[in-house]
Image (cartoon, rainbow, N blue to C red; front, side, top):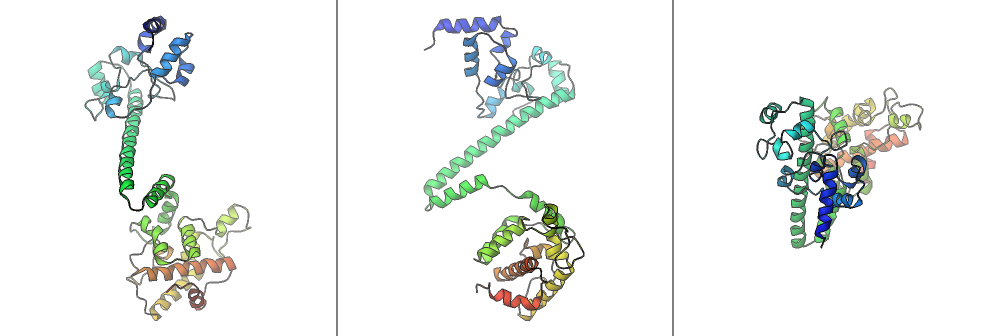
Length: 338
Protein backbone atom coordinates (compact mmCIF):
# COMPACT_ATOMS: atom_id res chain seq x y z
CA UNK A 1 0.00 0.00 0.00
CA UNK A 2 1.33 3.47 -0.92
CA UNK A 3 2.06 5.68 2.04
CA UNK A 4 -0.15 8.77 2.53
CA UNK A 5 2.98 10.96 2.50
CA UNK A 6 3.61 9.92 -1.09
CA UNK A 7 0.23 11.27 -2.14
CA UNK A 8 0.93 14.51 -0.28
CA UNK A 9 4.27 14.77 -2.08
CA UNK A 10 2.55 14.11 -5.41
CA UNK A 11 -0.14 16.74 -4.81
CA UNK A 12 2.38 19.38 -3.78
CA UNK A 13 4.52 18.68 -6.82
CA UNK A 14 1.70 19.14 -9.31
CA UNK A 15 0.45 22.32 -7.63
CA UNK A 16 3.94 23.79 -8.07
CA UNK A 17 3.78 22.98 -11.80
CA UNK A 18 2.57 25.61 -14.32
CA UNK A 19 -1.11 24.91 -15.08
CA UNK A 20 -0.79 22.39 -12.26
CA UNK A 21 -4.48 22.49 -11.46
CA UNK A 22 -5.13 20.93 -14.89
CA UNK A 23 -2.29 18.45 -14.82
CA UNK A 24 -4.09 15.89 -12.67
CA UNK A 25 -6.92 16.02 -15.19
CA UNK A 26 -4.58 15.32 -18.10
CA UNK A 27 -4.51 12.03 -19.94
CA UNK A 28 -1.03 11.86 -21.44
CA UNK A 29 0.88 8.72 -22.32
CA UNK A 30 4.56 8.41 -21.49
CA UNK A 31 5.71 9.61 -24.92
CA UNK A 32 3.63 12.78 -24.76
CA UNK A 33 4.69 13.38 -21.16
CA UNK A 34 8.33 13.27 -22.19
CA UNK A 35 7.74 15.45 -25.27
CA UNK A 36 5.34 18.14 -24.06
CA UNK A 37 5.56 18.18 -20.24
CA UNK A 38 8.87 18.83 -18.49
CA UNK A 39 8.77 17.50 -14.92
CA UNK A 40 11.95 17.22 -12.90
CA UNK A 41 10.28 15.20 -10.15
CA UNK A 42 10.68 11.47 -10.99
CA UNK A 43 7.94 10.49 -8.52
CA UNK A 44 5.36 12.75 -10.22
CA UNK A 45 6.39 11.45 -13.63
CA UNK A 46 5.81 7.83 -12.57
CA UNK A 47 2.39 8.67 -11.10
CA UNK A 48 1.31 10.40 -14.32
CA UNK A 49 2.44 7.41 -16.40
CA UNK A 50 0.26 5.10 -14.32
CA UNK A 51 -2.58 7.64 -14.53
CA UNK A 52 -2.92 7.15 -18.30
CA UNK A 53 -5.19 4.42 -19.66
CA UNK A 54 -6.09 4.22 -23.37
CA UNK A 55 -8.65 1.44 -22.94
CA UNK A 56 -11.97 3.09 -23.82
CA UNK A 57 -14.58 0.36 -23.59
CA UNK A 58 -17.87 2.24 -23.81
CA UNK A 59 -19.50 5.48 -24.87
CA UNK A 60 -19.95 6.28 -21.17
CA UNK A 61 -16.16 6.25 -20.81
CA UNK A 62 -15.91 8.51 -23.84
CA UNK A 63 -18.35 11.08 -22.44
CA UNK A 64 -16.28 11.50 -19.30
CA UNK A 65 -13.00 11.70 -21.23
CA UNK A 66 -11.08 14.97 -20.66
CA UNK A 67 -10.50 17.04 -23.80
CA UNK A 68 -7.32 18.87 -22.84
CA UNK A 69 -3.82 17.45 -22.53
CA UNK A 70 -5.17 14.09 -23.67
CA UNK A 71 -3.09 11.73 -25.80
CA UNK A 72 -6.28 10.24 -27.26
CA UNK A 73 -7.59 13.62 -28.44
CA UNK A 74 -5.02 14.71 -30.99
CA UNK A 75 -5.01 17.40 -33.65
CA UNK A 76 -1.90 17.86 -35.74
CA UNK A 77 -0.61 14.65 -34.09
CA UNK A 78 -0.37 16.25 -30.65
CA UNK A 79 -2.62 16.77 -27.61
CA UNK A 80 -4.49 20.07 -27.46
CA UNK A 81 -5.42 22.72 -24.93
CA UNK A 82 -7.84 25.52 -25.83
CA UNK A 83 -7.60 27.93 -22.92
CA UNK A 84 -10.63 30.01 -23.98
CA UNK A 85 -12.79 26.86 -24.20
CA UNK A 86 -11.54 25.50 -20.89
CA UNK A 87 -12.19 28.78 -19.08
CA UNK A 88 -15.83 28.59 -20.21
CA UNK A 89 -16.29 25.19 -18.58
CA UNK A 90 -15.72 22.92 -21.58
CA UNK A 91 -13.66 20.15 -20.00
CA UNK A 92 -15.00 16.77 -21.11
CA UNK A 93 -16.50 15.20 -24.22
CA UNK A 94 -19.97 15.38 -22.66
CA UNK A 95 -19.78 19.18 -22.80
CA UNK A 96 -19.73 18.93 -26.61
CA UNK A 97 -22.83 16.74 -26.72
CA UNK A 98 -26.44 17.81 -27.22
CA UNK A 99 -27.57 14.37 -26.11
CA UNK A 100 -26.09 10.88 -25.88
CA UNK A 101 -25.79 10.54 -29.67
CA UNK A 102 -25.58 14.03 -31.17
CA UNK A 103 -22.98 16.77 -30.94
CA UNK A 104 -23.74 20.42 -30.38
CA UNK A 105 -23.72 22.38 -33.61
CA UNK A 106 -21.18 25.17 -34.08
CA UNK A 107 -23.83 27.77 -33.31
CA UNK A 108 -25.21 25.86 -30.32
CA UNK A 109 -21.75 25.48 -28.82
CA UNK A 110 -21.03 29.23 -29.05
CA UNK A 111 -24.42 30.16 -27.61
CA UNK A 112 -24.34 27.66 -24.73
CA UNK A 113 -20.81 28.44 -23.53
CA UNK A 114 -20.37 31.96 -24.90
CA UNK A 115 -17.07 30.90 -26.44
CA UNK A 116 -15.37 32.72 -29.30
CA UNK A 117 -13.94 30.32 -31.87
CA UNK A 118 -14.09 29.51 -35.56
CA UNK A 119 -15.67 26.64 -37.47
CA UNK A 120 -12.36 24.98 -38.42
CA UNK A 121 -11.31 24.63 -34.77
CA UNK A 122 -14.76 23.33 -33.86
CA UNK A 123 -14.87 20.88 -36.77
CA UNK A 124 -11.36 19.57 -36.07
CA UNK A 125 -12.20 18.70 -32.45
CA UNK A 126 -15.60 17.17 -33.26
CA UNK A 127 -14.06 15.04 -36.03
CA UNK A 128 -11.43 13.75 -33.61
CA UNK A 129 -14.09 12.74 -31.06
CA UNK A 130 -16.15 11.04 -33.78
CA UNK A 131 -13.14 8.93 -34.73
CA UNK A 132 -12.76 7.84 -31.11
CA UNK A 133 -16.46 6.96 -30.92
CA UNK A 134 -16.26 4.91 -34.13
CA UNK A 135 -13.21 3.08 -32.78
CA UNK A 136 -15.13 2.16 -29.61
CA UNK A 137 -18.13 0.93 -31.61
CA UNK A 138 -15.91 -1.14 -33.90
CA UNK A 139 -14.09 -2.63 -30.92
CA UNK A 140 -17.36 -3.49 -29.20
CA UNK A 141 -18.66 -5.08 -32.42
CA UNK A 142 -15.45 -7.12 -32.66
CA UNK A 143 -15.86 -8.26 -29.06
CA UNK A 144 -19.49 -9.26 -29.71
CA UNK A 145 -18.48 -11.16 -32.82
CA UNK A 146 -15.72 -12.92 -30.91
CA UNK A 147 -18.15 -13.94 -28.15
CA UNK A 148 -20.50 -15.34 -30.78
CA UNK A 149 -17.59 -17.16 -32.42
CA UNK A 150 -16.57 -18.76 -29.12
CA UNK A 151 -20.15 -19.96 -28.54
CA UNK A 152 -20.35 -21.40 -32.06
CA UNK A 153 -16.88 -22.91 -31.73
CA UNK A 154 -17.89 -24.82 -28.59
CA UNK A 155 -21.07 -26.11 -30.25
CA UNK A 156 -19.58 -26.87 -33.68
CA UNK A 157 -19.17 -30.57 -34.60
CA UNK A 158 -16.11 -29.65 -36.69
CA UNK A 159 -14.52 -26.87 -34.67
CA UNK A 160 -11.19 -27.03 -36.55
CA UNK A 161 -12.93 -25.97 -39.79
CA UNK A 162 -14.61 -23.06 -38.01
CA UNK A 163 -11.27 -21.97 -36.52
CA UNK A 164 -9.64 -22.14 -39.96
CA UNK A 165 -12.33 -19.91 -41.49
CA UNK A 166 -11.92 -17.44 -38.63
CA UNK A 167 -8.15 -17.24 -39.15
CA UNK A 168 -8.53 -16.80 -42.90
CA UNK A 169 -11.17 -14.07 -42.53
CA UNK A 170 -8.81 -12.14 -40.26
CA UNK A 171 -6.06 -12.17 -42.90
CA UNK A 172 -8.00 -11.79 -46.14
CA UNK A 173 -9.15 -8.54 -47.69
CA UNK A 174 -11.48 -7.79 -50.57
CA UNK A 175 -9.61 -7.09 -53.87
CA UNK A 176 -11.52 -3.85 -54.48
CA UNK A 177 -9.05 -2.45 -57.01
CA UNK A 178 -9.36 -5.39 -59.39
CA UNK A 179 -13.15 -5.36 -58.94
CA UNK A 180 -13.32 -1.67 -59.79
CA UNK A 181 -11.20 -2.21 -62.91
CA UNK A 182 -13.38 -5.08 -64.13
CA UNK A 183 -16.51 -3.04 -63.46
CA UNK A 184 -15.05 -0.13 -65.43
CA UNK A 185 -14.03 -2.43 -68.29
CA UNK A 186 -17.45 -4.07 -68.52
CA UNK A 187 -19.56 -0.97 -67.90
CA UNK A 188 -19.74 -0.13 -71.61
CA UNK A 189 -21.55 -3.39 -72.26
CA UNK A 190 -23.35 -4.23 -69.02
CA UNK A 191 -24.78 -2.38 -66.05
CA UNK A 192 -25.93 -5.21 -63.77
CA UNK A 193 -24.47 -5.58 -60.32
CA UNK A 194 -21.81 -8.28 -60.00
CA UNK A 195 -22.07 -10.83 -57.20
CA UNK A 196 -18.35 -11.00 -56.48
CA UNK A 197 -18.63 -13.67 -53.82
CA UNK A 198 -20.34 -16.01 -56.28
CA UNK A 199 -17.88 -15.08 -59.04
CA UNK A 200 -14.99 -16.26 -56.87
CA UNK A 201 -16.79 -19.50 -55.87
CA UNK A 202 -18.01 -20.63 -59.30
CA UNK A 203 -14.71 -22.24 -60.45
CA UNK A 204 -14.72 -24.48 -57.36
CA UNK A 205 -18.31 -25.54 -58.08
CA UNK A 206 -17.66 -26.41 -61.72
CA UNK A 207 -14.34 -28.28 -61.71
CA UNK A 208 -11.68 -29.96 -59.59
CA UNK A 209 -8.91 -29.18 -62.07
CA UNK A 210 -6.39 -27.14 -60.10
CA UNK A 211 -4.92 -25.39 -63.14
CA UNK A 212 -8.36 -24.11 -64.19
CA UNK A 213 -9.16 -22.85 -60.68
CA UNK A 214 -5.77 -21.10 -60.42
CA UNK A 215 -6.17 -19.60 -63.89
CA UNK A 216 -9.61 -18.14 -63.06
CA UNK A 217 -8.31 -16.84 -59.73
CA UNK A 218 -5.49 -15.00 -61.51
CA UNK A 219 -7.86 -13.67 -64.16
CA UNK A 220 -10.36 -12.25 -61.66
CA UNK A 221 -7.54 -10.71 -59.63
CA UNK A 222 -5.92 -9.39 -62.83
CA UNK A 223 -2.69 -11.26 -62.23
CA UNK A 224 -2.22 -12.65 -65.74
CA UNK A 225 0.76 -11.02 -67.46
CA UNK A 226 -0.50 -9.58 -70.74
CA UNK A 227 1.77 -7.76 -73.19
CA UNK A 228 0.95 -4.29 -71.89
CA UNK A 229 2.17 -5.32 -68.43
CA UNK A 230 5.25 -7.12 -69.79
CA UNK A 231 6.12 -4.02 -71.78
CA UNK A 232 5.71 -1.83 -68.68
CA UNK A 233 8.20 -3.90 -66.67
CA UNK A 234 10.66 -4.09 -69.58
CA UNK A 235 10.32 -7.76 -70.56
CA UNK A 236 8.74 -7.06 -73.97
CA UNK A 237 9.68 -4.36 -76.45
CA UNK A 238 6.05 -3.70 -77.41
CA UNK A 239 2.55 -4.05 -75.93
CA UNK A 240 0.81 -5.17 -79.15
CA UNK A 241 -1.79 -7.94 -78.95
CA UNK A 242 -0.45 -11.45 -79.64
CA UNK A 243 -3.45 -12.26 -81.84
CA UNK A 244 -4.54 -9.21 -83.85
CA UNK A 245 -1.17 -7.37 -83.80
CA UNK A 246 -2.93 -4.02 -84.08
CA UNK A 247 -3.99 -2.88 -80.58
CA UNK A 248 -2.53 -2.87 -77.09
CA UNK A 249 -3.00 -6.19 -75.32
CA UNK A 250 -4.84 -5.76 -72.02
CA UNK A 251 -6.87 -8.44 -70.25
CA UNK A 252 -10.12 -6.97 -71.51
CA UNK A 253 -8.81 -6.76 -75.08
CA UNK A 254 -7.33 -10.26 -75.05
CA UNK A 255 -10.48 -12.01 -73.81
CA UNK A 256 -13.15 -9.81 -75.39
CA UNK A 257 -12.47 -6.97 -77.81
CA UNK A 258 -9.69 -8.51 -79.94
CA UNK A 259 -10.97 -9.30 -83.45
CA UNK A 260 -9.46 -12.80 -83.37
CA UNK A 261 -10.96 -13.49 -79.96
CA UNK A 262 -14.35 -12.24 -81.15
CA UNK A 263 -14.24 -14.72 -84.05
CA UNK A 264 -13.48 -17.50 -81.59
CA UNK A 265 -16.44 -16.56 -79.35
CA UNK A 266 -18.75 -16.55 -82.36
CA UNK A 267 -17.56 -20.04 -83.26
CA UNK A 268 -17.89 -21.08 -79.62
CA UNK A 269 -21.56 -20.05 -79.55
CA UNK A 270 -22.22 -22.08 -82.71
CA UNK A 271 -20.44 -25.03 -81.13
CA UNK A 272 -22.70 -24.79 -78.06
CA UNK A 273 -25.79 -24.76 -80.30
CA UNK A 274 -24.55 -27.74 -82.32
CA UNK A 275 -24.07 -29.68 -79.09
CA UNK A 276 -27.55 -28.67 -77.89
CA UNK A 277 -26.21 -26.61 -75.03
CA UNK A 278 -28.75 -23.83 -74.58
CA UNK A 279 -28.03 -20.67 -72.61
CA UNK A 280 -30.65 -18.46 -70.98
CA UNK A 281 -29.51 -15.66 -73.29
CA UNK A 282 -27.90 -15.88 -76.71
CA UNK A 283 -26.27 -12.44 -76.27
CA UNK A 284 -22.76 -12.60 -74.90
CA UNK A 285 -21.47 -9.75 -72.75
CA UNK A 286 -17.94 -9.29 -71.38
CA UNK A 287 -18.97 -9.98 -67.79
CA UNK A 288 -20.22 -13.43 -68.87
CA UNK A 289 -17.09 -14.10 -70.92
CA UNK A 290 -14.77 -13.14 -68.05
CA UNK A 291 -16.77 -15.26 -65.59
CA UNK A 292 -18.20 -12.47 -63.46
CA UNK A 293 -21.83 -13.55 -63.85
CA UNK A 294 -23.55 -16.88 -64.18
CA UNK A 295 -27.23 -15.88 -64.26
CA UNK A 296 -27.33 -16.54 -68.03
CA UNK A 297 -25.94 -20.06 -67.53
CA UNK A 298 -28.25 -22.94 -66.66
CA UNK A 299 -25.76 -24.96 -64.61
CA UNK A 300 -22.14 -25.32 -63.56
CA UNK A 301 -21.45 -27.53 -66.57
CA UNK A 302 -22.07 -24.57 -68.87
CA UNK A 303 -19.85 -22.40 -66.69
CA UNK A 304 -17.17 -25.08 -67.06
CA UNK A 305 -17.31 -24.80 -70.87
CA UNK A 306 -16.79 -21.04 -70.67
CA UNK A 307 -13.97 -21.52 -68.17
CA UNK A 308 -12.19 -23.95 -70.50
CA UNK A 309 -12.75 -21.54 -73.42
CA UNK A 310 -11.06 -18.74 -71.47
CA UNK A 311 -8.21 -21.05 -70.53
CA UNK A 312 -7.89 -22.11 -74.18
CA UNK A 313 -7.52 -18.45 -75.25
CA UNK A 314 -4.82 -17.95 -72.63
CA UNK A 315 -3.02 -21.13 -73.75
CA UNK A 316 -3.06 -19.88 -77.33
CA UNK A 317 -1.66 -16.53 -76.20
CA UNK A 318 1.13 -18.31 -74.31
CA UNK A 319 1.98 -20.40 -77.39
CA UNK A 320 1.50 -17.39 -79.70
CA UNK A 321 -1.02 -19.16 -81.92
CA UNK A 322 -4.48 -17.96 -82.93
CA UNK A 323 -7.47 -19.38 -81.01
CA UNK A 324 -9.46 -21.50 -83.48
CA UNK A 325 -12.75 -23.15 -82.63
CA UNK A 326 -11.72 -26.18 -84.70
CA UNK A 327 -9.01 -27.00 -82.16
CA UNK A 328 -11.18 -26.31 -79.11
CA UNK A 329 -13.01 -29.73 -78.87
CA UNK A 330 -9.76 -31.66 -78.57
CA UNK A 331 -8.52 -29.17 -75.97
CA UNK A 332 -11.78 -29.56 -74.06
CA UNK A 333 -11.69 -33.36 -74.12
CA UNK A 334 -8.48 -33.37 -72.07
CA UNK A 335 -10.17 -31.38 -69.31
CA UNK A 336 -13.77 -32.66 -69.18
CA UNK A 337 -14.54 -34.14 -65.74
CA UNK A 338 -17.93 -35.55 -66.74
